[in-house]
Length: 382
Image (cartoon, rainbow, N blue to C red; front, top):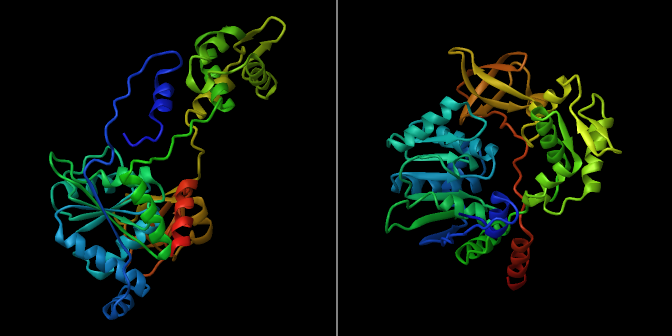
């Protein structure tokens, strides 16, 4: 798989002092990469007016459309959901019948399933998508992957391009369409590192106390009484906690004992931890924190005419644009807010290519230090 530090991940999966065999498969299997930095032509200035965008964007859209029309099945990856919405909406403004749809994690499940099915059965020639289609989802045979702008990371590029050419003897083919000179240099460095299989290492957080607290709470739900040494012995078998100390265990237990409402009764003299008599707080703590992903307030977008879910909007976008009459783009189409009821936004479709593009939290992709160094070296040569 596309992992830069397989030994570390293997130990994370199986635990400490257990043997594990790593089967190394060349991730940069027959892979062909091409980087394109389109410059606007005279026709792109006219197209830009028609699409309500800039000539540089129109040039990139023109190149992408040419490639999609030449192929049977294309995935067009972007780095953010907002950029996916921009591209999908501009293609619809350009040609409402162009067989391209959109797929990302903030769309309603029926919309995502319809997009996957459309690409698989040949009704669509392309999907504008984000990391939601990087792994695992079966969308049939893909013969080309287009990455819009630098993928920012080597593993991301290999995962995405690897979605194409899934047949014996076929080559995974990918094209990176870049935005400017800096973006092009970054894409060049990442493509070179991908072909040399220089993947980013996976960083596993050492001894996260919040996870430790949560797992001790889970043990208490099952067992009413635990001894300190039992906790230490259990957790030291897990790779992230292999060097956990008794002092650190006591620090976490002190938090569980002293917080309000209390999660555990702890006797530091007897080195014993007991389940509280009133365990409602313990149950709530355990089941409210099953994921390490922080919760964000979200609003469900509902088509007023059909009462069908369209997608999801984040609180930040709603705080700025969440008013009746506001037009915005989602699922590649323009919508107008009719009214808002609780955490539901009722909308109706409108025939207007302009509108606000939603922003979603947590979409920025960091650039590895080694890639940044490579870009700096190329800049020095240029």
